[in-house]
Amino acid sequence: MATLAITLGEPAGIGPDIVASALQNPSAHRRIVIGCATTLKARAQQLGLAMNLVDYGDDPYDTASIEIINCPTEAAVIPGALNTANAASVLQSLERAAHGALRGEFDAIITAPVQKSVINDAGVPFSGHTEFFADMAGVPKVVMMLVAGSLRVALVTTHLPLSAVPKAITSQAITETLHITQRDLQQHFGIANPRLAVLGLNPHAGEGGHLGREEIEIITPCLEQLKNQGFDLLGPLPADTAFQPLILDQVDAVIAQYHDQGLPVLKYAGFGEAVNVTLGLPFIRTSVDHGTALDLAGTGRAKTGSFSAAFELAATLASLKS
Ligand SMILES: NC(=O)C1=CN([C@@H]2O[C@H](COP(=O)(O)OP(=O)(O)OC[C@H]3O[C@@H](n4cnc5c(N)ncnc54)[C@H](O)[C@@H]3O)[C@@H](O)[C@H]2O)C=CC1
Ligand SMILES: NCC(=O)COP(=O)(O)O
Image (cartoon, rainbow, N blue to C red):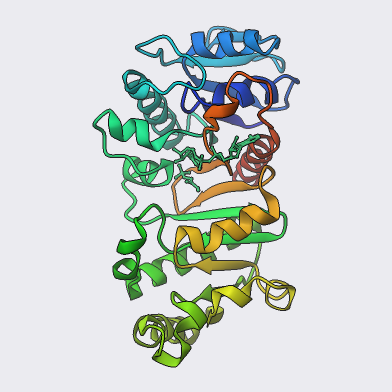
């Protein structure tokens, strides 16, 4: 049995809906939701779902119960309507989850989606859970990897404006990404000798320098150095032709240089069933593949497939660790 912390995410989004829906059945794992208890109860009621919520630690563990660590929102929550007053509650829930995971109180964290913009609008710099948890853990570099069936896509850079990407593609960023991905695929995914396909940055991987020089000046020398150290790498490959069975059948993960180079393909392959996992943290963190879907909050139309997959992957990774 694993002890799994679940953060509720943006209270006006579909986080409360998917958490209430997906946690209906008893589980072999202890489930601790961190977020606004009033919001979760209200959303469950709106969706006609029963929720057996008990305060964290109050009762002996019961397979049907959901424990809650309450992080009340400042203002009443209206599904679909963002409110900067409630950003503090979201951040408090993430901090509580990270502190608990760092001290071994939780075996893993599963996050429901947050609305990054409303946290920024509340005056707090925040680019994503990935970077937030890295900061909380004091880890300078982590890797965002999404998994859809046998397809795994990891990113060298995460939440950056496109204009900032080329500068961020450094030998150090690529080297660290490949080290973290290789190590975590070995340690957590049981892949003894991961083979990784690394994408170029430019169209046609730079077309021999005629469409950009990052492949020649940065990526290729970096990959050669890592190959000499024993890494099993393909690339740099043109991104537009890399996602085909000829390549994918021979690799364990694709390394994309930036968010929208790799994730649209992954989400086309498995949106609604895929899982986002942060590699390189000192604790396990998985998440959904989708955002806050404000348009669906409180409607009963939010699908729970990705959350359930994230929950199962977190439980599996936690059991492999112990
Ligand atoms: N892990 C996280 O915290 C993530 C947060 N986000 C944040 O979410 C916010 C909204 O992002 P968008 O790009 O609009 O993406 P989104 O995923 O919220 O919505 C895209 C489309 O997919 C639909 N959709 C999303 N989840 C669904 C579900 N479970 N069931 C059925 N339909 C679903 C939505 O209704 C919408 O039509 C942004 O602030 C973004 O930063 C986005 C991705 C991940
Ligand atoms: N598109 C994936 C995404 O934005 C997830 O971000 P994070 O909040 O998990 O860092």
